[in-house]
Amino acid sequence: MAGHSFDIEVGSRPLEQLDIVKFRILKIKTDAQRREKAAEIAASVCKLSNSECDDPSETWLYRINGLQVPAGRVLTKERLIKEITVRKRPVILKWDYSALSDRVIKKKHLPSGHHYLIITGYDPDEDKFRVFDPWKGRTSGSGGHEHWVSYAGYLVPKVNLGLKVFAKHNFDVFSLTSGSGILEKAERSSTDLRTEPPVAQVLLEPLSFDALDDARQIIEHLVAKRVVVTRDRVKVTEPLAVGRIYPIVAISTDQLMKARSGPEKLLAKPLTSSVIATVIGAASGEIFDSILLYHEEDGWKEAEYSNTLVTRLMETVQATHPNRETDPFRSYYLVSIPEQGEFFAAQGIGTSALLATLDNEAKGDLIPAHVALGDVITRIEQTAKRTSPIRRAPRSPRRSSPQRR
Image 1: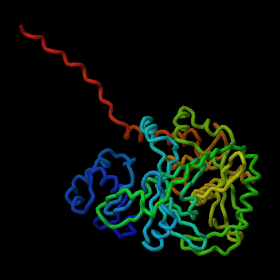
Image 2 (image 1 turned 90 degrees about the vertical axis):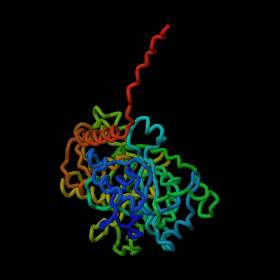
Image 3 (image 1 turned 30 degrees about the vertical axis):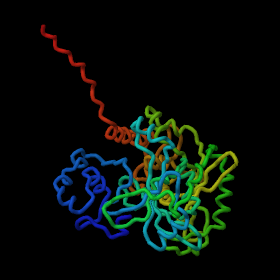
Image 4 (image 1 turned 45 degrees about the vertical axis):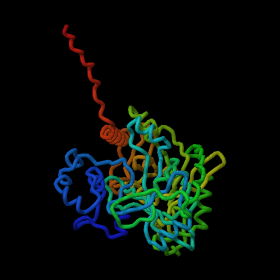
């Protein structure tokens, strides 16, 4: 998306994610280098290994330069607005779902919980920024999702899709320009930056699916005063109503790997600390927005970020595999593994739980939880194997030759 904002193409077609991985591996920064290494690109390690070409490295932008925010600093609201409204260039963000240090992640050889988003717009009337989330599933063509958030949401996202999430502002990229793909750290003293706020201490507290009436009331109150704006800043004039409400069972990568012998056990109890609801047109039933609430000791709170694409895919599962339950908290629930970009519509608990992936436009069948989660575990193990360092056997000590006398 950043490249397309400059109409940058590689050859006769747009730059694709697979190209980025290949170019990084082959250290290609310019068109001249691309032409020189055409044969290596065609026979790249990605193609030869038949892998998905996962690349855990940082943002790399072919033929685009930019500035990264230094540690302990964040972009000011004024600079964000200038980037979008004056320079008309996107701003790249980075989140971390894992809450683990990079050292711990590397030691375990687990795929990290890092996730990139991009700010693409600003609405002065609502004083909110349009954030694009590229998640669309491994085989989906949906193209991701956009959501409007406040500046406070940029600073401290807190919770998303059931897990705590932390902004990694020292990887925010702004001031994008055409160039040779070089990212430099901005000056700490720049007036475009301010001190990073303290990390939010969110203590999620789970509740039973049967104890969510307070959440329902809060969602109804929020929808009653909701103003929904499309990506083009057009306000939805149709009266709004609450659609379905889905409890979220969030699973971290670490939890999943520890339960690899029986991952369905992670769904043994109908407990949730967050819910996501659809906001629909009262007459049309069309989904216009979504609301995510998370629960702490002092009650339910609205999260800045919510993924309406996920709720639309949940509705697709509902239509394909109808459930007889009339209680909106009992019809289906969302199994969320944000670190891996894996989401499932689920019904039943424990060994009887059935899951339908939201990947591939949610057109798959309901399958046993141990099978669906087992597939995710297998992919994680394969990725960890590809990215773990090769350990060579220690050499035997060389025997010294006997001295001649």
